[in-house]
Amino acid sequence: MLKDIIHFLFYLIRKYLFCVVLCLPYALFSQSEYDSAIKHYNNNQFNLASTSFQKLIKDADPFDTINRTNYYITYSKVLKQIEKIDSSYYYLSQAKPYIFSKKNKDSILLYYALQSELTRFDNNKYLCDKTILESEAFFNSNKSYEFDKDILAYYLNRKAAGFNAFHHAN
Image (cartoon, rainbow, N blue to C red; front, top):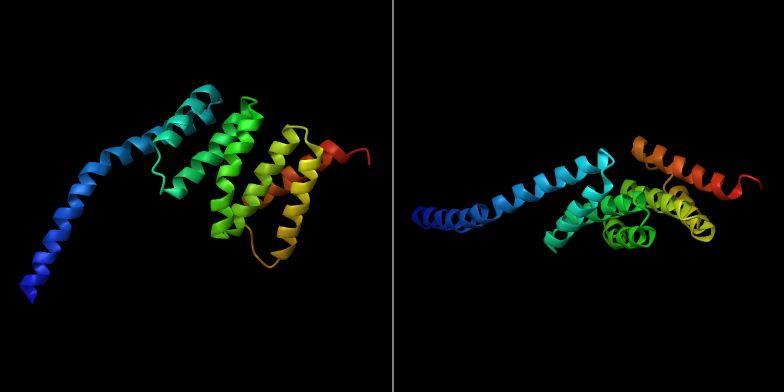
């Protein structure tokens, strides 16, 4: 019995060690590529960040929804900065199903803040008002939840910016 367990453990180690050896360089490459993309974004080098995120999205594992979603959201923000608004909407919409399926309240509120910012930047009053109404309904239905203070501050700031952009004279 003990001999069978030991053989089984060695079998698993050999099987998965092979996977680790094959996948580790890709994982390290992906992380360094992501770090490079974020560095470009933080340094306002949006064209370089755009190129890096395009590569990350193209090379991402289709089953790695967490990283893909992160790439989509950040790439959407990059595209907004280089005024490719339609593409920015597209990549943010690609992240939406995963964000809402996980039911993480902070992530959903962040999604609404990003959507509100895009609609304001795009000067789309109808979509901005719709986003604000949806986000208010979500926020009000979760009043007992203690949102992350940074996400909440960002959400309230973007909501106020949307109101200011379209309703300041009303």
